Image 1 (cartoon, rainbow, N blue to C red):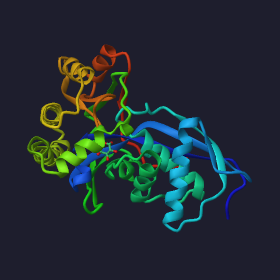
Image 2: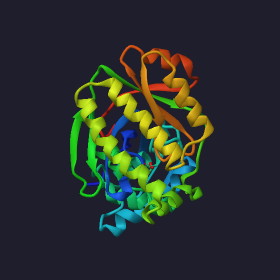
Image 3: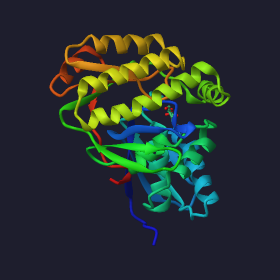
Image 4: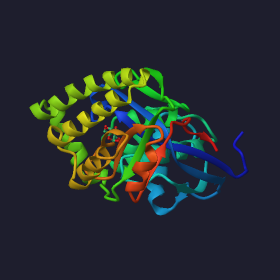
Length: 301
Ligand code: GLA
């Protein structure tokens, strides 16, 4: 029975520990759902499906269309979104938005990651992989997901309290719809050598990073993160001056063992890994930075 009452749904952003630009190749990646979050408050309406602020509406339409395509009923709902996830910054604000809207338009049915991926494609035209949507829906508190993007199989890996993840926002923004993401994807799928070199070295780093996380080896994990940054910078060519600068500044901070750009790249955030206790030194050095923790996936608020 659809509810007539005000309902609120939440969806987390995602931090990808490692495994960048390999989800759409069927690779295995290691993200977690993080405690930068978004909320949708929703009510029934007799009018059209309508969500504010303005940027949310294309996603509401994309989600509604993807739900209908998959044979779901779409409830007439309107509502408002509020968020602490910076947009266009590598933390999957659009996957979080799609997930929360799907919950709002179905009165809380947990959406399939592939449906959200389709919704995002309809809303933005970006041919993303399925990593972000899976992390946002299937995340678990205190755990990262070792996710096989070819099969959707997940094994959860605990994130030890001794390891602190810090997200640093450079304040620069990309627009995923600007075509560079799709271009990189096309280049690696066409077998361009440097792009492929990133993909194959990155896959190896993911497995090593999962082992380092299980062993609580922050130094090994940090070295792998920095390896990913170098590979994304030099082989995949998705870094920027601001991202490189933030990575080097983070790495020169006592107790920080590694850093890299996070998400698609070109702009946005850097992820740094530090011994727990040392994160305050990182937080002090940057104007906008957060210690992030792994939380549960999207659901009722
Ligand atoms: C974006 C996409 C993901 C993934 C990353 C890069 O976040 O939405 O599917 O490809 O970029 O790893």
